[in-house]
Length: 478
Image (cartoon, rainbow, N blue to C red; front, side, top):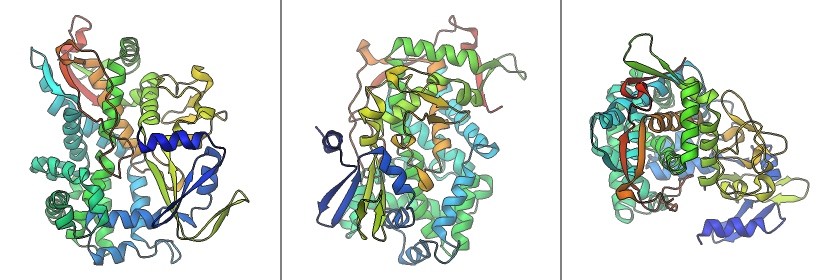
């Protein structure tokens, strides 16, 4: 039993809303009841995300002392709105809000994934044998960054940077200690330096106007506040963590759950067929998959994604108590300590979810699965009044909810839709599907990767099932 599971089971057996862990560095408060989450969010000024994320970000990215001074300036907002961290956060939300720009970059990402990685498999008569996690990691590493950084994307220009980033990710824990990292975390330090230098060159050539509004905003805000391109390169390596680290394992486990369940696979394919596919008006040999409809009308696929995030999200939202703060009229949090809201505890709360085993239809509108009903909007699932919204936090919550959650969800569900409709996946050598356990590789991972990869046969579906399987595809938002 891992430590995370031990904590989850231990907290679930008590009625205490917050647990206090005494550590050498001080106390850590761990929230174990959903009702306390809202109370924490209402005290965002004194139970703050900014000091922790800033310190961790600087240590992980290796930014200079000069950059640290700029980043830490006016973190609490007491000197008005002129704050690098605040401006980056606000502009990131604006850049990644559902709308034309997010649809544009999602379309670039999905069409790149199709043409660069998936369509070539269709041209082969024989089955392609791939390591599924490694294949998805390569696909998302390239296509996601192509969408965000444009044609001068450093990872596209130098493919070896992809492996450098993942070497950096698996060595984040010793880098976080920040004690002579060139010696104590040599592999991660070297990989980080290579990636940072590549992004410095990217920013020096100023290609951001041909990229995404997110990349442009990060560059313009950094320069406005006096951060040089060397430090911008370091900070952008940190941005890759948010773009890639959790999307790969989420897509992996979503696909495995769908393909290992024949009835679920058939139902998802029918849902896509009925709601998202149509022939192109531009070409008789092309099929359009309307990603807007995948997002808004394919309830089962969306629910399966939501359930994947509920089951596999192991991360915790961390806050720093900047002043003594009383919540709920009875709980005193002392200044200088850390507070954590662990997803695993909330997502496995039997009082909220009932049976917590994987249930792909749990988040469907008017579902009576396990007695827990979830209603839907055109874009996101909202937990009904019978189920507290604070119990579901794969992207955090409140004022610090992940700005990139809409893009992450779209690239996961869009890639999954393409692969589920166009391909058959099966374990190599006729073996049965098995779910590999998760294994944490770095402290920043909210969704842990599998402990080992799955070797699969990857083959295009027979066009006898549907003539459209023999046509080219285009992903659009309409």
